[in-house]
Length: 277
Image (cartoon, rainbow, N blue to C red; front, side):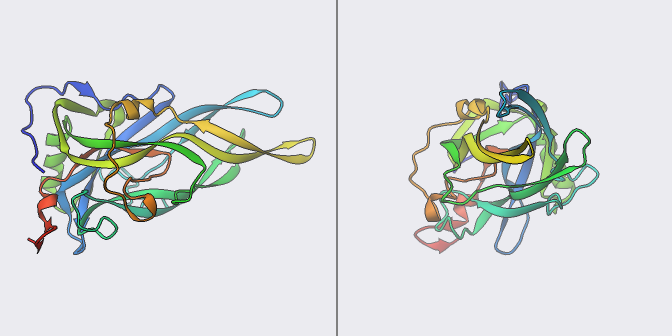
């Protein structure tokens, strides 16, 4: 996979076009291998929600607004950085790799993206109500409607700044910018570098509310305004599929999405015909 030359000047098109109800940041997560090396020339840019606003309707027909704030602890330049993620969450690592890997279920080189399995939150009118949310990310999941899209490589306006940070610290594993300040240059599209990824359109879940002294359970469907992510990505071909039909296409939690990818010379690390090179 060859990487195109970086175009000069300001990138021509924003990659983050999230709805006004959402605030995001983009984290560049670098690669690793079976030896545990930090491979800073291999990366995925992942857009993560910081604030998400939504409305729900009660069984009485009343609409209620809700604002959720997410803590990620993923910025090495900020207070509270934790490579293992926010302590109030249970997570699992998804190994995002080049489709040229001999075995995508056990890759030689990959990008580790930490995916949420469950999280704890507090809220309510007084802020003292505690909640735990479990996210069903397994392959038998029928609680979400998704569209599989191909995420390809573009040069981005953060490339130079991120590279400078990685050059300063060869062990650094992430670089973060606000979503509104992240742009990619559409003139540098390299569709030879790609991953296929599930973008969520709808989530189904259950909620309960107290009504006349009785807990009322009801099914809820949440629409995620992710059309911009679909519009900014490509059609998949589905030729490379992992175990149980996922990873690839990569399945993350509902609060983050892959928006850019770079494998550099990763595809040359392992030749399918000759083995290790």
